[in-house]
Length: 137
Image (cartoon, rainbow, N blue to C red; front, side, top):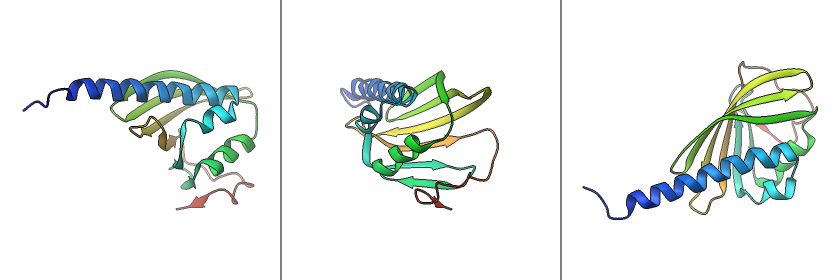
């Protein structure tokens, strides 16, 4: 059974999610912290499964990125969105080192990012100096 208008809404949600995902990477790359804040839900959750770290809340997530060391750069290799979910394959560069990252985003109906999960190629211990921002699990 098809619900009238449901396809239109799903396409609209997908377009909103896709734009939020692209804006997320663009604002991180430009270090546009106020612009990034405008994309995030107040209670956004950021997780890094390899280090088992979780950051809760917009302010802590912004601070984490502002304080992140090195001259890092992001470029979208692939972005796929469906409804309120997006997957990003990123080319990440820190100095001369290059890595791939896979990022999953959950976007609310209002277009705000509510959850970010960053997957890196291999598990690693977190670097010191950010214990005040994260909880380990």
